[in-house]
Amino acid sequence: MELHILLLVGLTVFLGTLSGKLFQKIKIPQVTGYIIVGLLLGQSFSKAWTPELVEMMDPLVNLALGIIGFMLGSELSFDVFRNRGRSIYSILFGQAFLTFLIVAVAVSFFTKKIYLGLLFGAIASATAPAATVDVLWEYKTRGPLSSMLLAIVALDDVLALILYAFASVFAKTLIVHGQFSFEHIFHAFTEISIGVFLGTLSGFVLYWLTHFIRDRDRILPFSFGIIALTVGIAAHMQIDLILACMVSGVTLRNIAPKESEAIFLTIKKASMPLFVIFFVLVGARLDVAVFKASIASLLAIYIISRIIGKTLGSFLGGLIGKAPKNITNYLGICLFSQAGVAIGMAISIHYHLSQVGLEASQIGLMIINITVASTFVFQLVGPLSIRYAVYRTREMGKNITEEDVIDSYSVLDLIEKNVPVIPQDTTLNNMVEKIKTSDSYDFCVIDDKNRLLGSISIGDLRDMLLEKEMSLTNLVMAKDIVVPSARVIESCRPLKEAIDILRLKDLDFLPVVKDEKTREFVGHIHYKQIMAAVNKEWLERRGA
Image 1 (cartoon, rainbow, N blue to C red):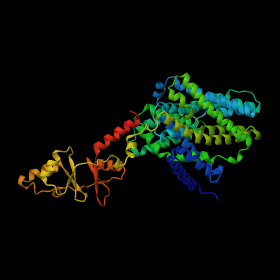
Image 2: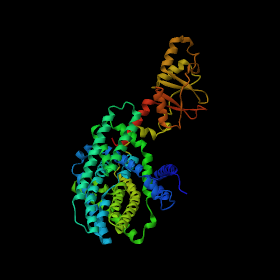
Image 3: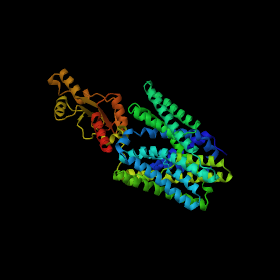
Image 4: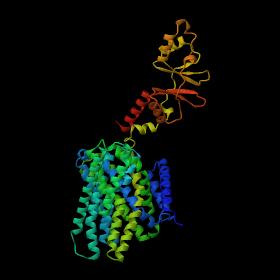
C-alpha cells in the first residue's frame, strides 16, 4: 500500500532529523544520517519512496538546490579572491582537470569505451556544495581552509559544467559516429551566461527590496519568493539553477554585506527541513538490485580514481599556487562530496542518450545508477573527511556567535556561589558593617534554613538609615526591610533563560535557587559579569 505523499514527507523529515541528531551525538555529520534514512525508505529496502514519488518531489528538490546555491553564494566575498591570490585558481583548476583526466583514463581503460570515460570524468569533476556547506555550518568552522573550501566549491560546479559541455559533445559524436559540431559548446557557454545574468538580476532585486522592507517578518517570504522565481525561470529556460542562485547570493553578499545578513540568517534557519528532504532523497534514489559484478567493479574504479584525482589535484595546485601548508595538505579530502550537479549531469546524459537509441538509453541508465551509488558513498565519506580536516587544522568551532556561547551554558556554569548574604536576624547596624567589607551593591537575605527571603540593596539601607533614629537601628532586622525577589532562577536552567529575564525586567542581578518551591539559596548571577564571561569565551573560541 502506497503511503500518502504528505505522510511520507512528514516521516522523511522526522526520521531524517532524528537520525541526523543521533549521528551528531556519535560525532558523525548529520548528513550521513539523512542519507541512510533515504536508503532505508527508498527502493532498495522499504520502497516507500518509489521512483515515481521521487520524481514528484523534483520541484522541491530544485528549490532546495536553489537555496543551497544561494547560501553558498552568501559565503563568497570578493575579498576571498583578493586575499588568496593565485592559489585559489591553481587549486580550482588542478583538482578539476586532474580529476577529469584520471577518471576518464581509468574508466576508458576498464570499459574500452572512451565516451564513457569522458562522461564519467566530467561528472567526477563536480563537488557537492550542499554537504560541504552543511558540515561547515554544523561544526561552525572558521579559518583559511574553510574560506578556501567555500570558494572552491562555489566555483567548482561552473568549471564542471564547462567540462561536461565539451565531454558530452565528444561522447555523443563517438556514440552515433556523427560529425563533430561546435553547436553544443556554444550552447553551453550561452547557458552559463544566461545563468550569471539571471542570478545577478535577482540579487539586485533582493538588494532593492531590503530598502523597502520595514517589517522584518516579511524578509523570509520575500526572499523565498525571489529564490523560487529564480529557480523557476532557470528550470523553464533549462539553465543551471544552482549557478543562477549562487550568483544571486554572491551579488547580494557583495553589494550589501551588512543589510543582507538578516536575509541569509533567516533563510538558513527556515530551510533545514528542505535540506533534510534533499539528502534523504539522495539515498532513496539508490537501487542496489541493479548492480552486477561488472557494474560494481566500474563503480569501485570510478570512486577510487575520483578520490585520487581530487586529492592529488588539490595538493599539486596548492604547491603550484604556494598555498599555506594546511590548505595544501587537507583541502583535497574536503572535496569528495558529490550530489545534485553530478546527478543532474547523469540525468541529462540519460535524456540525451535516450534520443539516440535503446542501447544508448541503457548506457544512460547505467550512468545514472553508478552516479547515484557513488553519490551515496561520497556523501558518507565526504562529510567525515571534512570533519577530520577542519579538526586537524583547528578550525572547528571558530565561527560561532555570542548566542552559540550562551546556548552552551547553564546557570550553574556561571553562578557566583560564595557571595555575601545577610541572615534574617541581622540588625541594621550589623548590616552596615557587613556592607563596608563587601564590593557588592545587592545582598540576598536568607532564613535559618538557607531559604531565600528576598534582597536588600545599598539604596534600601540608605533610605532606612535616614528614616530611623540611630538609637533604633539595633531594633531593625533584615527580615523587617527585605524586599521579596520578584524573579528567581533555578540553577539547572539554561543561561539563556536567565539572560532573557534580566533583559526583559531590566535587572542587574538575579538570585539563584536550587528549587523554586523550596527556594533554597545557591548564589546569584550579575548581568555584566556573565556577559563579560560570555564575550571572553566567544573571543577565545574564535581564536581572536
